[in-house]
Image 1 (cartoon, rainbow, N blue to C red):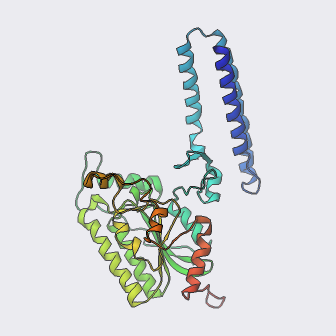
Image 2 (image 1 turned 90 degrees about the vertical axis):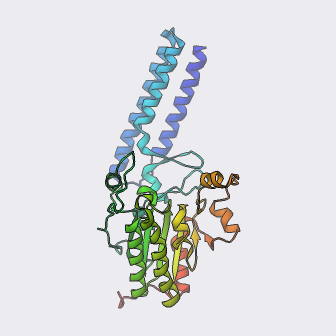
Image 3 (image 1 turned 180 degrees about the vertical axis):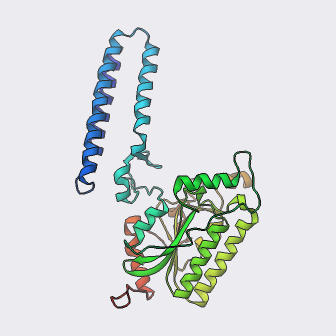
Length: 354
């Protein structure tokens, strides 16, 4: 029995070693020389660890008398090794494959195993869409207060805001500003799901409203990248008011000024965002496999006592029902937006205009 278990463990160690070597040995055109050096050191270190672990395991198998003690010790060692290097990998939410974090950003946070679009931070999306050196943030010092003095049993609202600000480096759940997309000037707002689930409070609503008004005054095309769990309950009805405020500003932008607005729906887009500016675009774009809904699956089932069909709130299913205009993968998004803007009369600046 011990010989069989030894062979099995050695095979697993060998597979792990081969996988780590193939994933961590990155081509020089992706990483700099210093990164290559660090990766090679790490590669040799962890592979050495694997070999040592395999050697110590085989020794303990021969001398051990208590099978349960061996199992516990072995699983504990494997768990320690997994936890130690967990920060180097990102697990796909769809296929559960591991993606090496250092190159995932260069792949636009798209899973290399199945092509699933993983969540992106607002800063990464700015790099994806905006030309380098052209980003000008707006209202970045605006912060939320505690207008209704909301206190839960877990922690006060203000304390929660402070912890998210430290964790994400953002003041709020949206970044707004102006920039250029392939040379075309535009106004853009990007929601960040990492900050309180992208929930829409007073500051989020105010920043987006000011962005829309600025785009109206400057006659700029407008993009809002949506990623939100809906209205922020910690601000009560003040949060719900933001839907009407933003929609009113968009009415003036689209109907009176006759300008061009494109919302981009990413996963997840739910609640008040879906019920307002997420669905008011002239052209509505969604990412592949995005979760888009007004109410979540669990809420619908508990309220109506009816089962929601699996996949009925995915972007592919909703596209077939005509909810939006197009599903565009991330690697094609910038070029598609460029063609849309040029078709609607927005062109790159000339040297004189710059």
